[in-house]
Image (cartoon, rainbow, N blue to C red; front, side, top):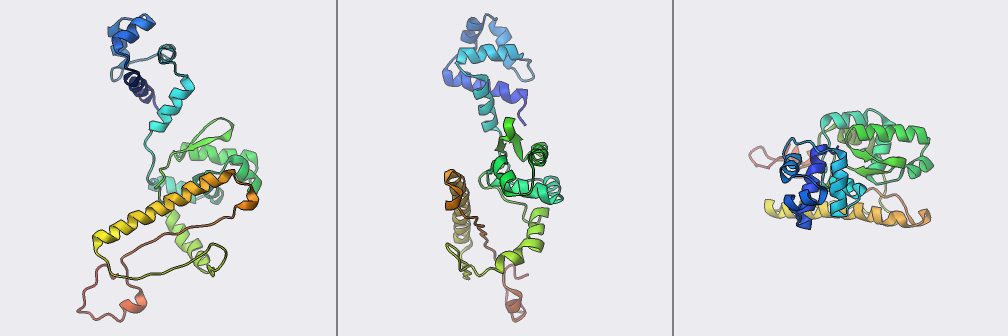
Length: 253
C-alpha cells in the first residue's frame, strides 16, 4: 500500500523531471525555501493542501499523481507463505484470486461463476488486505504481482495443485485444437539450460500478455487454455532404480 512518504517521493521526482527547483517552487506557492525543504525532508510533514498546490504548479491532477505512485510500487515476484495459506484455505477466494491473476473484471467473475456481486466484492477486499491486489472504486483493481510472478515452488498453492489438479490436467489427451504435450529429454551445459529457462519464462509472460490483449474479443472467439511450463534436472524413478550405484548423477533424487 502506498504511504505519504511514497507520495512525497513521487512529487520530488515530478519536480526533478519538470526542472523546478525548491526555490522556484517556494516562490510560486508563497512559502520560504526552508519550509519547502522541511516538507520534502525525510520524516517531514506535507499537508494535503500543499500537495494540491504543488500539483497545480506541476499541472498534474492528484489522481494522476496517485496513479504514478501506485505504478512505482515494487511488484511481488511471489507471495509470502502466509498469503498463500490464506488464499488456498478458501476455495472461492482461490478462484477469485486466479481470475484476478488473469485480469478478469468483477463482472466477468460474477457472470461466469456462482458468486454474487456482494461475495465477489468481499473476496476482492480480502485480496486487497492480503496485498495481492489494490482495490479501486467500482471493484476495479490493480494487480500487485509482477508479470513473472510464480507461486512458491513448495508452497501451499503448488501443493494444492500437485495433489488436486496435476493428475486431472495430465489425464487429458492434449489432442484438441491448439493443444500439445511434448516431453523432451537431454543433457545440457548448465549455462545453456539457464538460457532455456529464461526463454520459457518469456513464453509464459507472452501468454499472459496475450490473454490481456484478447479480453477485447467477443467471448465466442476465446477459449480457456492452461499453459504449464516446467524444466527440471531429474531422473524418473523407473530409471533411477536401474542406475548403477557407482554412477554419479546430479540431483537423481
